[in-house]
Image 1: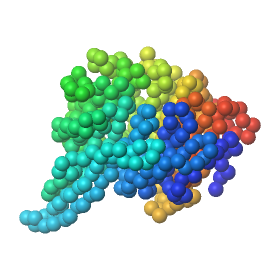
Image 2 (image 1 turned 180 degrees about the vertical axis):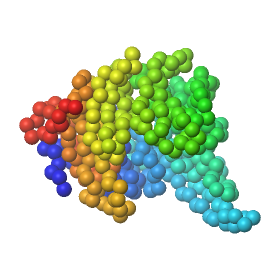
Image 3 (image 1 turned 120 degrees about the vertical axis):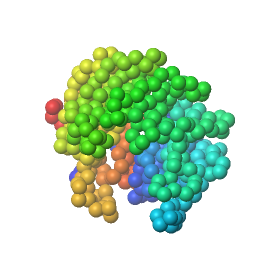
Image 4 (image 1 turned 90 degrees about the horizontal axis):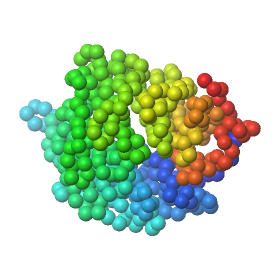
Length: 427
């Protein structure tokens, strides 16, 4: 095992010492931190100053995404889904069918006491595989598998829930792909498509669901991705991915051409287009806190790169080459916008399913100066399969996850200025 970087840090220990911790979140005042254990679903709140475990919440196992829970902005509640799913095969007309039964629910917990506040559930029950809370906590979306008998795959729909009234509305069948809320919760971007991939999206007003504007793909060989909104909600970023022939469509990313487009949310007017090189998968985007910069993570596994884009012009101002890796987390800006942290990890292709974190190379955390794009410091992190990094609200500390622990790194000394730090050369 490589030595962990020498930058000063403290450890917050999870009750499950082997837990795969995910989805870090700081309280608004920076005094507490929350993380979930992906392996058993337990949420844990710590006091950062003392390291004491404050509140533990048993959500339940069976999560399908690292972001399986969401604290509200005031940090009074946490929302998470749980479900029991039963699939029973049977023969019908000489074919194998299946009968789906589900008992999914979304619950909100009091983060101070760990007690359940409210339970949200369909009638009759559905299997809920994914939920997403809106920025204000007023709404959440669920992905629901409908009970019934199916020859191949169960039918699923998306539901929009109003947290205050506990009311729910099922979205149209075609709205089965990604949904992104605007920062002010006044609208949401909804991908539409009858097949496996989205063929357009609509910006819908909340709570009326009135269509503000919509975009469709230019051809059947193109699919769409809704990415993110700017912090002030003025702009929305989305992507079009196109293939030269049906044989390649939706399968061979080496032949795909991707256009990433910034739209004006009020009018649907296209502001600018940013092109990825053919075969380069650009899939991680983050706006700076002031909304003036956009960072994009792309490239190939043999050479990842981070591009800094000027939001006003769409021009790439810096390109930072990163190390070879198989997985990168979303870029994280410091609150003042001066630094970008990006966690990465290499998993060899021959890794066994029974592998433990010590069997794979340790994760890295690149600390990049936003003004220049220079990697000023690279932290060697403890062994772990999951990746997550979050700056504290005041930017003086940075939290990362390890196996069964959260590490709180002291950032009062700027990256690259510690005598024993590991520095990467400017690329």
